[in-house]
Length: 91
Image (cartoon, rainbow, N blue to C red; front, top):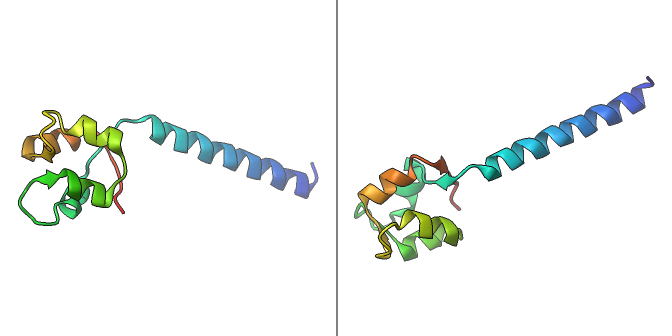
């Protein structure tokens, strides 16, 4: 096979691999990392308010999942549960 064609085939395979890897990550449940939780807790009170969360993330579905008792605050237990899921990145 000529080199230019091999390069195209290799690039196509690499693109497919990246696409599949990105889809696999997207299919995993999202959660919090310790780093994300600390970054979100801007007043350092150990809780993450809804305002603090959305200052760093726009994932409303994740907020609803994490705020299990729907009180508008992620307490230590909710944060702990969120850390057992696939971590998100924050802005």
